[in-house]
Image (tube, rainbow, N blue to C red; front, side, top):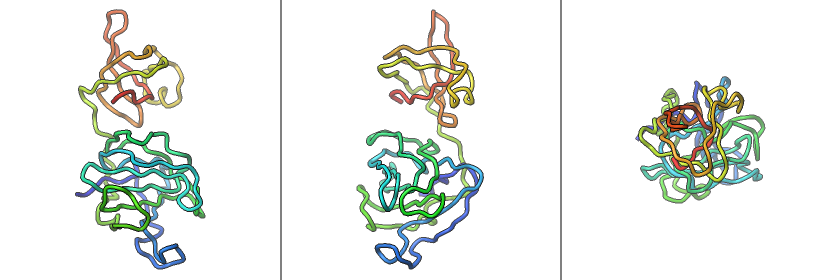
Length: 212
């Protein structure tokens, strides 16, 4: 299976897979790439988060997820710790973090590894990411048509536009704790919801993923 790019725009390779060097195994375990126009990192395929970690000495902030077809994918050197919890279901194109330079890194970049296994392990079952990723595929996030969204234990603001949702300003409504809605799309990390308010059907964007 060929996956989409982890970037939203064109990127360039800075370090090749299995390049010989001073790494612990004597070679590079993944591919390093840099995007100069957008630092957002997204999932290359549908899957489930299996591991997240703060700023370690080597990989820095990183996230590991298992794709639905059984591959383990590692993103390393993220700018900040991934917000998604272990067990979270993710969709191809969904934002997972931001390109950074944490851990053993000399500049902002993405280190990506793909392993042919159920559980990620350092230097095990390595595959060449260039054989599985189409770096020119920037397909938008998959729709969540007819999926039920459920609010958490606090109220969630709703916004008219994606820009307002990301900036968390100019809210147009409020969803109460435990309230449900229909999620019809995921756009740039914001969830498009259809819900009922005072007997009227309304729609807007929310930042919280709910139970989708």
